[in-house]
Amino acid sequence: MEVLAIIPARGGSKGIKRKNLRILNGRPLIYYTIRESLKSKYISRTIVSTEDNEIAKISIEYGAEIIKRPLELAKDDTPTIDVILHVLDVLKAQDFEPDIVVLLQPTSPLRNAQDIDNAIELFIKSDCESVVSVCEIEHSPYWSFKIENGYLKSIFGEEYLKKRRQDLPKVYTPNGAIYISTPKILRRYRSFYCQKTIPYIMPPERSIDIDNEIDFLLAELLMKKYGKK
Image (tube, rainbow, N blue to C red):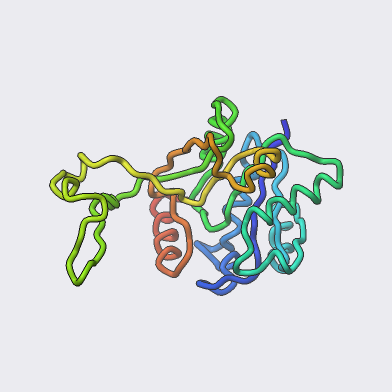
């Protein structure tokens, strides 16, 4: 079984300049995702999709393969699925079609190889079309409000405001760490969200999705606390 990991890493970024190469705990951010992908017992190829020569050079040094993407697929509003399908089309032209596709975003540096392998096993053993990693939301949206005419109004209903937090329904959000499907399903839905998408639940300490400076600081603190060198 051929399991392909795709790591999308463009050179530009809005929130943090050159984010994928930003040094985190002594290494470029992208290093951690490449390393854990290469440690997976299931992933047979790890490919970084980038238009950036420096990212390509560093990724090769860390052991990844490179597929250069065209500049029109490296814009701020480029959908990730278009990047994935570009990689699959390039590989198909080279007579390679993976059985399973694993999307690993470099902004999730605390996700580890065990998470990747557990999620792949879940995908293989389950009746599903895709697996998406999630974590439980700490602050329940059932206690959310909107403002109408200057007053707070419960979005989900007053009855939820009377419940204890532990009595509210558990709610989960995608953490951006792991997405799994097949080329056939991705081409059909153009998404990892399908009719049969199941969750791989991760703890909050490995669910940091780096988008701003606070995320960087938190990730570095967690790495030092848990000895991730």
